[in-house]
Each structure stands twice: as C-alpha cells, then as structure tokens.
Length: 331
Length: 237
Image 1: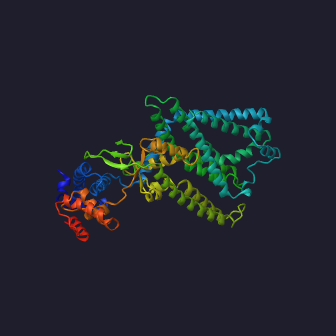
Image 2 (image 1 turned 45 degrees about the vertical axis):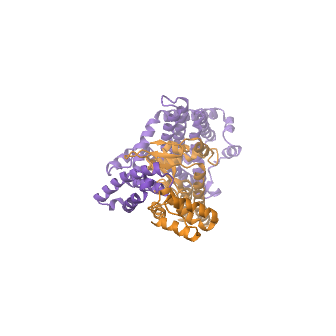
Image 3 (image 1 turned 135 degrees about the vertical axis):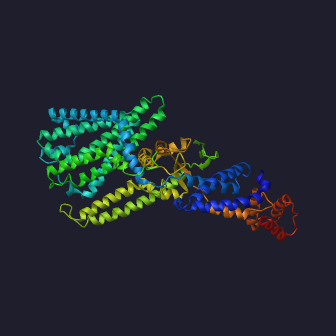
C-alpha cells in the first residue's frame, strides 16, 4: 500500500481506531472487560502494521511519530507488570539474597578467616610487645588508656547521640564501600583493608588488656560491633569476589564474571545497608550510655546479629512468601 | 532484545520492534542535578529541624526529645542516602529529576525495573561515584554501547527518553496537518508554511506555496492572500 497516495482515506479510518485505542489504554486495566482487553490486543497488532508502513514510507512525519507513540503506549499497557513492590521486595529477600550469599560462601569464609587471623596476629603482637601499640593507636588514645580511661568514655558529652550515630553510620558505610570497591584491584585492596582492620581490632583489645581495661572496651563494642564487623567482613567478601572475577573469570569472560559478581555483591549490599544504619544508631545511643548494663548490651548485640542472620538466610521470607499469592513480577 | 547505539529495540510478538531512544550522559546529568537539589533541600530542612531539637535538651539527661532527635537523624539519613532507591521504587524506576528531564528507567523488556534491580543499580551508585563526581559512571555511559553506567549494567537497566509529546497531542497535531489531497510529508510542510507565513518574504511564500499547490494539481493564484487561502483549503480538505 502506498501511504503517500492513499494517505487521506487511510488516515481518516485509522485515526478513529487510534483514538478508540487510546481511550481504552487510558483506563485502568482492571476496569476493562474481556472484549475491551481483546480489542486492545487486536489493536496492538493493527498499530504495528500501521507503524510498519509509516516507518518505511513516511519516516519523520507527524503520522510516523503518532504511530510510534501509540505503539509504545500499547506495548507498555499490555506488558506492564502489575505494581507489586512488596512482592518484589519479598522475592529479593526470600530468593535472590540467600542465593547471592550461597554463591559467595567461599569468599565469606576466606574473609572471615583472614579477618580473624589478622585480629589474632595484632592481639598477640601488642600483648607481648605493648610498645607496638603505637602503630595502631594514636598518642592521645594511648595516654587515656594509661590514665585509666577509654576514648569511648564521655562520648555523648562531646556531641549529641544523633550526630554521633550519623557520623558513625557514614564512616561505616565508607569503610564497607572501600572494602568492596577495592576488590577491583584484583582483590588486593580488599585484602589490605581486611588485614588492617583486623590487626587494629586485635591490637586495640590487647593494649587495653595490658592496662586491664579490655572488659570496658568489650562492653562498649558488644552492642553494635557484632553486626558492624560482620557487615564489613561481608563487604570485603564481596570485594574478594570482584577480585576473583577479574583474576579468574572462567569461560564466560571477564565482563560476564564481573557482572555476576557485582550483581551478587550489590544484592548483598542492598540488604546490608539497613543493618549498618541500625549499628550506627546502637553505637550512638546504646553503646556510650553508661547506665545500660552488660546483660542488655549482650542481648542487643546478639539479638541484632540474629536478626541479620535470619534476613540473610531467607527462610523466614520464604515462609512469608508462601502465604502470599505469587509475585508475577518476580524474575 | 537487541540494542543499537541510539535506541533500545524490544522484540515484540508482532514482529515489529518497539524503539526506545537511549540517552547519554548529558541528559542523565541534568536529571541527576534536579534530584540532587531535591535531596539536598530535604536533608537541609531536616538538619535544621534536628539542630533546633538538639538545642532543646541535655543529652546526658533522658528526655523524649532524644527520640525526636533520633527520628530526625533517621529521616535526614534517609532523605540523603535513600532518596534514589525509595523514590525509584515508588515511581517504578523513575525519579522527579528523570521525569522533569523526560527520561525513564526500564529493564531489558522495556518495563519498569523490579525492586531488586532498583536497589542494585542504586547501591552501585557508590562505585559509579568513584573517585568523585560520578566520573566512573560518566566514563561508563560514554564508553558503553548501550549508554549504561556500571549500576545499569549490573542491574540490567537502561535509561531511555520518554515520548516528548503525548499521543493525544500528536493525534491533535495529526488532525491539523492532514489533508485528503496531500501525502503526510507535504501536509506537514504546508502546515509549517502557513505557520511561518508572516515571517517569510513574498518571494519565498510564492515559491513554496506554488510548489505545494502544483503537486496537488491546483493552479496557484497571483495574489498573496488568495494563495494563502488556497493552502488553507488544501489542508482542510
């Protein structure tokens, strides 16, 4: 058919049809009855033919742009997934996140092992040679410990808990991002971050033990530290995964391996950020509060860790998902 | 799905691909700036509120204001850190900045991305933002064949241009430029000529109008006003 020659007659017939289809797709899908839905589906095919003619014969004209726009709207109206944010989130936590953690298991084991080994090394080194504590603690911190005080004492007198929580959260997020992103250096950057942080933790514990103040430090760390350190180690595991993808990509090639690794890491990161925020709030409001007893601190720390493990495991979400209708948009 | 450099082409059941124009770093930066202003504005307001509350109580003494303070901390963290993921989840991949700039975020099927994809592409902003000012993301968009930053690559999303003009307006425009005696290109040209008639010189008016009228089999009149009416009649037929 020559559109240029038959334009007027053809258009007057099609225009009415297009107007009708536009009216139908402007309605909500649940308001359409079966015959109207079928009309939209038939119209989709008709507009495809119209557009095909317009693309070939009258490109760049208003007619072409109108057909293009209508075709895109019809495609969207037919294929658009129903809005199901909760179902999509449930799928993320019930299926995608546990699967990502499972695939990263080896990297997590390596990261945990490396962190603990570094912590042990730092601890033994400073315990037997306290003068090496200066490699990890500032002079001010060392002076305070020697005077029988911790740098964590009176934190809330220096700044409000809200500001403290905010600063701690942003710092933790930075450390986690750095541990992850440095994995792009074939994992070497991540190894450095893990080792340094592990050494520091061990060294600080040992130095305070030399002056018999380690229990006070543990009392401060326990409420927030279990989850905070776990998330940073998980971020480092993700960084190691990136490094492994670069160094040993496998048959799919480096880009594909990186994409898969970053996908898993991103999924884990998306689920972990709320826990870093929670740990920041605990460190700002609970940890520095001298009136909160050890039992409550242990309960907070262990409880928050258990919540994190439950979320990462996914079993609870899968049980929840089973009680809901399946999420049609879950891919 | 195959992607050309200029557009995302979605294979469809009809056999005719839907084309969605991909956008480059410039348009994306424009949308980001709009969102950034909204983000910073909201965070600043909450920070001001928190500052007001902080000055009202003694942090060493228990007070209900501490909970208000904590809530404002959460809100200001949320406003800055979670603006993009939360807003994009609610707006199905879009944001106020993207909408203002006429952009949309879609997945490989041309649909709104899933919640997981939205979260993933936003977490990867942290990498795209390295070392500063989104340099990594900028380079990635410019080097990528499908104009994706790293977050898009990982999440399988694309940023495309939303239709500039609504279908309804295009239909109205089509009515205006349709004429039974003219092909679409000629009809549009005639409509444009009539629009610019006052700005054109007499010679150009005659030249263009005569060309259109002769192609439609109409003898052009010598008078300028009649010439114009002839064109209007041709378009209205």
